[in-house]
Image (cartoon, rainbow, N blue to C red; front, side, top):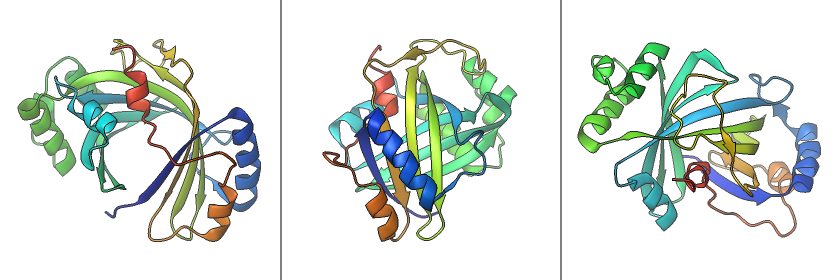
Length: 223
């Protein structure tokens, strides 16, 4: 595991069209996409006092958050992820979960996580039982990912961000989510040791500054 650099920009629909054209010429689409994109559904966890949310809003330099995620409505591959940020650098750890384990967590039965040989699942269990982690909201969105081998660069365009509100029917791909009002399109650029100039130049846009947009925070505006 290594920490990665990350930029986030809020962009317009016109910006997205420009970037899509540029990136398609110099980068390749992620091999797991369908027609160049995929849909992501995540379930975010937080403490009873919303520790992760408050630390994000306050810009705390060292923070973490847990989420469970699957793609394109496919329940055969579900991942538990922990994303940590330290002084502006990011690292993501992941483990696989079964549908049965996720449903048990949603039902408040955490014993199914005991005995897992994956360290991240063990940590997740300890944070649930000892730290009070609980499901908070579903976050849906569409992602267009591009990859570039030098620098291990990944550029994504994320849009159609929707919130599950208080709905916890996470494992039902057809459960209704609600569009987050005025949610922007998000450009994310991630890389390891260096960002090649060709990519740095391609993602430059007028009047576009690096920000700290959080899909989780945006989807918590309703509670």
